[in-house]
Image 1 (spheres, rainbow, N blue to C red):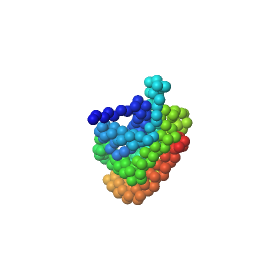
Image 2 (image 1 turned 30 degrees about the horizontal axis):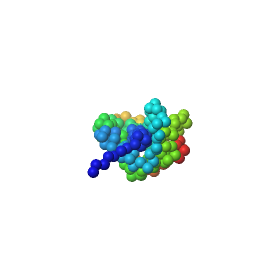
Image 3 (image 1 turned 180 degrees about the vertical axis):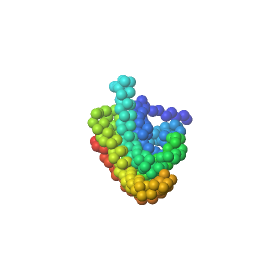
Image 4 (image 1 turned 120 degrees about the horizontal axis):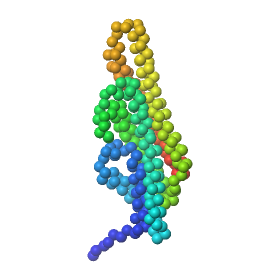
Amino acid sequence: MHTELAISLSALYGFLLVLARVAGAFIFVPLPGLNRGPEMTRSLLALSITIALFPLWPKIETGEYRTGILAGWLLAEAALGVTIGLAVSFVSEAFQVAAQLMGMQAGFAYASIVDPTTEADSSVLLVLAQLTAGLLFFSLGLDREVIRVFARSLEHYPPAAFSLSPRIAGPLLGLGAGIFSVGLRLAMPMLALMALVDLSLALFGRINAQLQLLSLAFPLKMMAGLVLLAWVASLFPRVYRDFVAGSLRVVIGVLGI
């Protein structure tokens, strides 16, 4: 006895709309190794989350709409997914900005290693910041929060009901500005310490011009930077959690959920 698996065209349209929303977010969500992972793995992950959201798939009456309208809905759903993904990715970008500022002042920017996520030369602190942000993404349960946001967005804004609006740009720009403010706050202790070290070396140079300050500056600044970084690193989870909470509030406020 043969059985056939029949999928209605309405369910297929609902699946494609939800998949467009989920796949749009995974372009920017900072999952460790996701950007360099196989395309099949990334596609399978987006497909699995879409299937997990099956109870929230919309029912589209296919006879009432043309192909152009459905294409517009797909673009709107992808834009909504990109909005959620950008809000999440801004958090890790703030840590990278802080790592760039600290590494340049402490002297770590002069040495580079291969970044495992991009296979490009990056400073040591930049790679450390990327790995730390990825670990905090999972340890704080942000992956589950992203899925909850998707589920709530499908409840309040079913596919084909969401429309692009200029009011979305303002909150996203505010989050983008938060990248630099949070990054500067994380790097400020290091910047202040490096300024004090430079001032001290300058005073020693005025007292004794025979000192080889260039050979002393690099090891001294790196050692002081490592000691301070070990203390500042304990604040990373708190800053990450606060920034994530603010990003999720922005997304929830934009979607009205």
